Amino acid sequence: MINATKKWLFLKISSIILIPLVIWFLFNLVSFYDKSYTDVVIFFTSQPNKFLFSLLVINMFFYSSLSISEVFEDYIGDNKLKNVANRLLYLFAIIISILTILVLYKISL
Image (cartoon, rainbow, N blue to C red; front, side, top):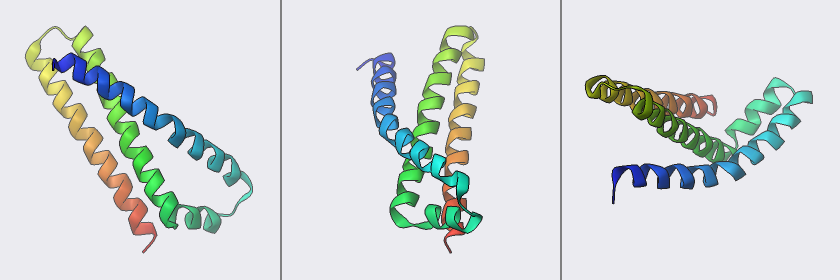
């Protein structure tokens, strides 16, 4: 399969996965308005919410890094610079996702 086709397919699959996760998070985010800090921490430390939020964060960074890499493909002409930018983007997405999940799981301890 062609590399561009794989990217396109991953973008479509991750966007389909993102839709219900974002709707779930937005409904819960609206309910945070009148809750205390401890209620919000309890929300993020309960097991199904922790898992769904982790899935949301990973999928958001995956989707955004694929989308931004497409911008790099279109607007950066130098192949070396394009490869460095893509690798830094993917590294950043992985590190931020891992740090977010580690902080989330550390809160529950």
